[in-house]
Length: 124
Image (cartoon, helix red, strand yellow):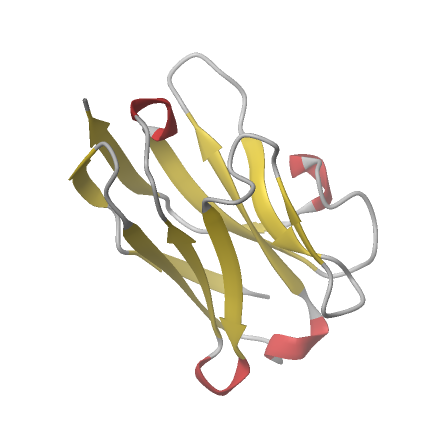
């Protein structure tokens, strides 16, 4: 089992920055991969950023590429999402998720473990 806890969300003005953290426990950190998704009311959870199964590959949604950066600190069992140049359209609940096998990193169904989510609100 993998337990995930997100933190770092909040309210920020457009153009500002936030850093989200996802701290994992319960299983050796290097045996799974963590990605970030976001979700707005009435819509499906969608991929934001994540690691390929073979490091150091990273992947981003087109809407965030060049503005967001995913990184990891294995010593702290933590994955980060640095979000810069935030836009009101980035407003959502952000979730980190873990998958324990190679597959389609883009699809939420590939992930068996999810955090509780953290709200990010970007004001215009």
